[in-house]
Amino acid sequence: MTHLLPLLVAVPVLGALVPFAFRRRFPTVGHRATGALLVAQVGLASAVVAGVATTGPLTYVVGGLPAAVGIGLLVDEVSSAFVLFVAVAAATLYLTVRTDPTGASDSLWLLFVAGLTGMAVTADVFNLYVFLEIAGLAAYALVGSRRGATAALAALQYLLVGTVGATFYLLGVGYLYVATGTLAMADLGPELAAVGYDSPLVVAALLLVTVGLGVKIAVFPLHTWKPDAYAAAGTDVAALLAALGSTVPGYALVRIVFDVFTVGTFEAVPLLQAVFVVGGLVSVVAGGYLTFRQSNVRRLLAYSSVLQFGLVFVGIGLATPGAVTAALILVLANGIAKGGLFVAAGQFEREFGARTVDEYAGLARERPVVAAGVAVAFASLVGLPPTVGFAGKWYLALAAVEVRGWVVAGVVLLSTLVSLAYGGRVVERLYLAPTTQGESTVADGGAAGDGPADDGPAGGEAADGGTADGETADGGTSKGWVAGGEVEATRRGREALVVVLAATATLALGLGSTALADWFAPVVEVWV
Image (tube, rainbow, N blue to C red; front, side, top):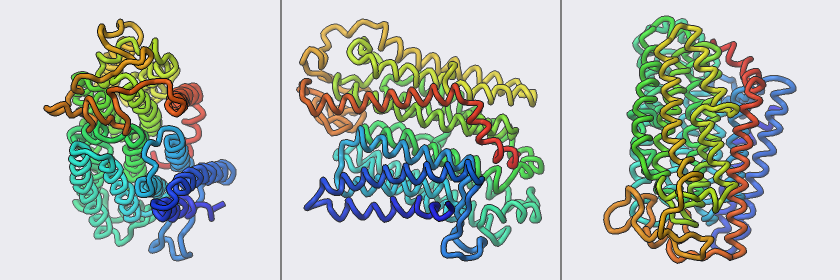
């Protein structure tokens, strides 16, 4: 079973050549090949998860070199969950909502999957940087692949900020190597203990790695790139980034903190533990405030991740088994909910020209299935039972009470109230608000989106990089779009399916949260 580990990365990397090679003469072949490769990736990930369930953690060193110098791969109970999530989310979104199946962008989609999968399975901190850059470069290009000045500017900002984050991470890796002479995660823990957890090199390395991954995760105040990138990208790319772009870096931070630096660093330097807790609390408060101020739905969803990942930082800082389990569950919960929500936002935007919360008025009557999925996803972000978001917040609150962290417990409650305020506002508009007077809908065969989009620049350019009367984020048009086409009906059904699947996963993992925590337990108990 261990021989499958390199294939998890090799298949999407080598497969990325296929759509690029066929991009001109046989684009349909490249598109179908990409879909087949992503489905194969799901099969590989499922087989690896089954192998972990049967035999325990799987390891592999490429080329048979010594683990200290070779490219080591490791899949355990925690990483296997993220490997499977990356594969399933990427394949599902490609087969259902992909709107730009060109050779170059399909290659980028596969490289993005390869980079994130590599981050999840690598057992080497430097190789994690390599995969981080592969995923990052693919993400920047995917955002910029949509024509338009807004998309290009957002991609450039994403590139610049992401490069700074990767540089911080690489500096931290360099400090680790100077301190220990190794980059293998399995060897770094003992070596750091020998060097001394309170060594300035070790402390600096942890802070640099945290800042570097914090940029990718987009916690406050390192979040500034995310709203613009998510608003400018096409619906398919925005959903992919929202589901996976911060999810895997979030997992990587949890693993590095507890697998490499270990809780011994927190015990030796309590101030580092306080940095995570206080930084997380600040991100929760600032993220909640920024989210509540938004009227553009895409930007609202992007800012809400600042709040959600603030809770993840708090879980890392508390450093108890329950808190670390909560952090892992919250990372997954946010990825699942955001993927479904961005797909729903894209459909509402394309069909009704609805970009703002106010423009969602009465849309539940037009798209009841999608609206129900949106309500479930927001319930998870709020932390309402029986969703997986509730499970994550419940574990975190219990961990805070266990260590008598009353302030932390209060902020967890505050995050729920703030999330209820912004999430409830969207759901209320969907279900209870009357349809905006004079607004024509697709059901009536009218045109939507006659006015400029919220937060858009002057001159009618929309916040999502399109124009209010022209191209929308998913490559369609908002004005003059007429319902009734068979292709559009099929597309609408596929998008609704994604939203339903995300809502179903949210509920299933919430009801099965005890089993999920038990699945993580063998690794988490070793960490803390």
